[in-house]
Length: 247
Image 1 (cartoon, rainbow, N blue to C red):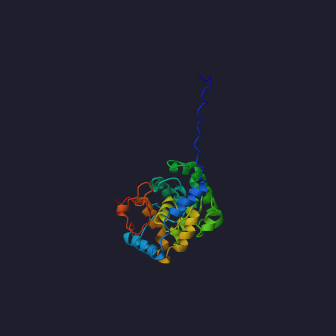
Image 2 (cartoon, rainbow, N blue to C red; image 1 turned 90 degrees about the vertical axis):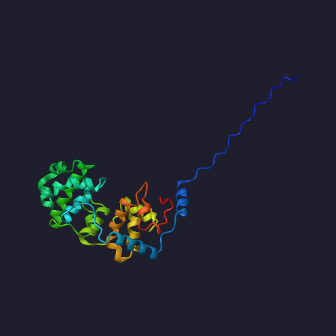
Image 3 (cartoon, rainbow, N blue to C red; image 1 turned 90 degrees about the horizontal axis):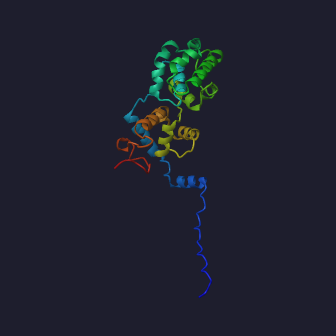
């Protein structure tokens, strides 16, 4: 009998698939996405949104351009309901930048302490109010570019203010508008700024002034993030979103 022992069996490690770069995955997803709707469909979408809500309004409470600016600035990382609760008493005592400065940062904090980041927001509102008094005579400028230079005011806040207070047809892109615009899709974009530029260029002029409110309200109450209520959507037959919830 041979003394030789059988050689151990060799096991071959299965070859792993090469990692797919994130950019390639993103590109593949974009290629599977539907193309944006054509102009005729876009017009019909906004015609129906207008028919369902002829005079759309924002849900933040305000009394003048200044209180609107403050309310929108406070709404970052907060709900409109929460902001309205905080500003109900605030705007009774401070509805101008001069009165806000008289109230002071500590006094303002007491009114908005229920909001996220209230310390930072109070500091910004006081600094913003000081700039308005010193450089603009207490008036809110009708300019996105100038408003963006104020403490705590970004492009979205500035766009909301000039749209509502001064009738400037701007699209202030938040998470709801970004979602709705890319689901329908009116546009296929990667960032809020890219979305704003594209929408302001493509939306027909007769609908542009109220488009911001139609899209944000549609996203907030119907085209929700996790489970869109497609069954009651007025434009569901025009929407190309592949994951509709219609039975």
